[in-house]
Length: 480
Image (tube, rainbow, N blue to C red):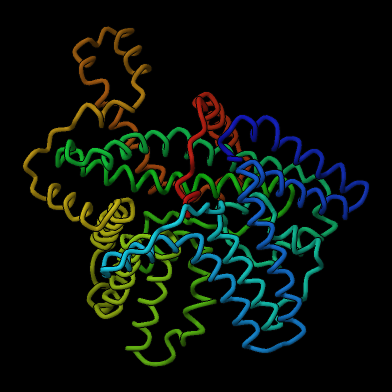
């Protein structure tokens, strides 16, 4: 089930919020069971087979956690982690590994038709977090119902944000959170509305052009490719942050706070700064569970740089089974190292220059992230920077809604502008996207403020997005 669907907005969400508070009036335990049931139904909507795989993973991990707590041995915790990573490798990377071997071997091995469980990267990492924290005595052993409620809590189930078990379980068991807090409901609705607008109105519009560009790179001009690169930069941000806004918003409605995942990442003035703002819960996970155990920055400069590279290679692999993701992570890590090496010189640059470098680098690397192969990325870059044909194709202009502009031009007899209506519509979208990314505070902070402007803008955002819900579109990070 997706947040940007009629069944979720009109049926699942209102029923969940109302029944949750009604059950908690009777008994807190009933409210917890309802969270578990809701999460199961939410995931089952994606298919019975992947739900069975997910269920088996939950049972195995809960049993492993009991053993880890009882044995209290490092090797046991390591074995539990390896079992999770092994499951992830099989479902997500098996065919990638086989194809890579086949490319470098005379003997060819068959691939398998493997059903990839939805959100496997997210729920695997969260179960690893629980196992490690339990082994280190950072948390108490969770009751079965608490563990199920933590893993199956549907707002974060498919695409995060990644959350520690303690912060979720403590809030679920907090009696004060069982009462309706209308300020939280209102703030949650506003945040959900902003997120829905980001996804449906902005991300999905840019996505149409991006899909055409990557499907038909030979037909795209150099001008098209520059726009497609920028559009994907907007698409992936509005898509993923839109989902996160909706997830945090829904959670706010029932008084449970989720970690903030984005803090205006395109305002970043360095790659290091970008990763402090982008997918913050993943960065926190990689830092705590990989970077620090490797020694962090406490074992010399060379070791620090190697740790950074390894962390970002893992980050790339986590996103998908393709060499494009590995190279994407490697370059991000390499740029962070370069910034550290050139720190004194870099800090002397004007903020505008640092922002331009960062935004340009992020754009180029998003193009790699989206590409089908490293070769496709290289070909697109060569074509772009040849600057041989900077014309804009009709396929790039087509997806941007222009009916309102057409009506206004006809109403005010601006016939000379009628031929430019699609281009103007595209420009309006681009300007709006830049303004949303670079000017206001992040949506979480904005949604917490109850004022006339926020109420009106969130209402407009919801109505506009809801009217655009002609069909469901998949979130980018559903694939990860």
